[in-house]
Amino acid sequence: MNAPHALLAILDGIGGPELLLVLAVVLIFFGGEKLPELARGMGKAIREFKKAAGDVEQEFKRAMDEAPVKPANPLLKPAPLAVPQSQEPPPAPAAPAAPVPPSPADRPPPEDPPSDHGIEA
Image (cartoon, rainbow, N blue to C red; front, side, top):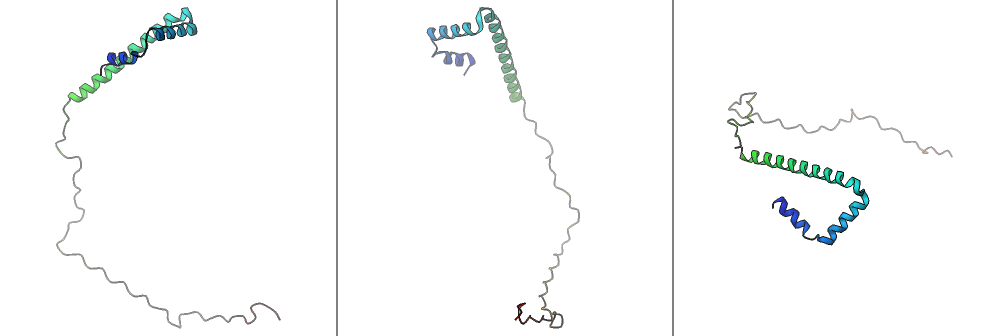
């Protein structure tokens, strides 16, 4: 959709009475002396906006026209092996030894429990 058509589609709902009301409100708020300066500033802003939009559109067209460059070599190459692989299978890991319970000589002697549990009779 072109920009002028979109602008006209927005202005379809605005008729003569609405436009006169908007101009009267602008005239009341800004006064007759500021109105030309306000219109000049709006004209500059619209011109700058159109220029920026045209630049962006040209940049997109230029980017679309350029053929994508495919690299000759892939960016990631496989890493060389640090250690040469041998043809022998690796040795099987040794089975873990079963835990050995401590012998009675290694156990600490049992403590004598207090007979009265700290209560004096």
